[in-house]
Length: 300
Image 1 (tube, rainbow, N blue to C red):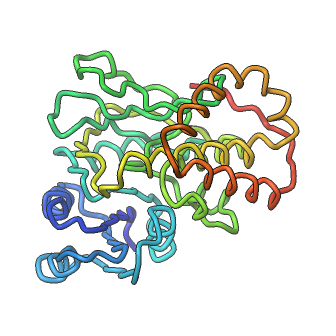
Image 2 (spheres, rainbow, N blue to C red):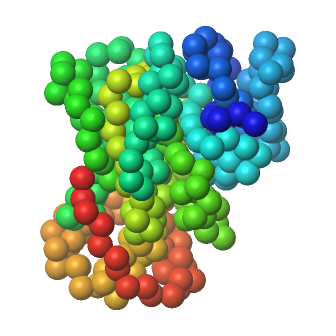
């Protein structure tokens, strides 16, 4: 049984998959399995994997089920103590697995999420050093857009990990799994990793940023357009709030959320035709869930 299960997602990813998998299999650390879940690619992503990487366990979905469902497919098929989620446009740095697994194994306390330093493909700019949830319930990638000049070289507690490259403890994932999966499949993709982190925090788990493990992320390999991504971010943020804070407590906070949320809503309503659909889906989602008492988490 491998210690680490690496879950890689592809969707029309032929230009990214070879650098991604080559970096994985060039790691000095070898106690891992790779499960690649393809979300109905129409290019030659699958044939590349079959021809060049026979050691990869391949799961082929007939259509694009979204990142959440695909990751869940991979996790369910895996057996490792540790789960590394990896987007196909991420390239692991030298020694990545050795560094992050050693750190995870030596960690004390209920740490179930480990965030490496994710740089953009230019190797000089921060993509994510972990997730932060603000008092206004906005979520941010720590360090996003900053030059990598030493400011983010210290390990620290964070709210959660960016699932483009995140190490999760299987014990935690099994404990917080919902009917909708480890990653909530109703989200399709975007915000799902923050939702997972919030659920984990409420269950007593923590997240840690470890900068010695470095990887490089191209970004937006799915090629979804800006308006579709805005729609998903808008909708999924409210899905997350309704789930994790509860309707009753969310109403109490409306006075604090309104100054930011209302102007943003008006802007999106006037510029994005998908927002009305998002409102209908948020309304339906809220009716499907019973209100729960908000369990506060310490923001990072």
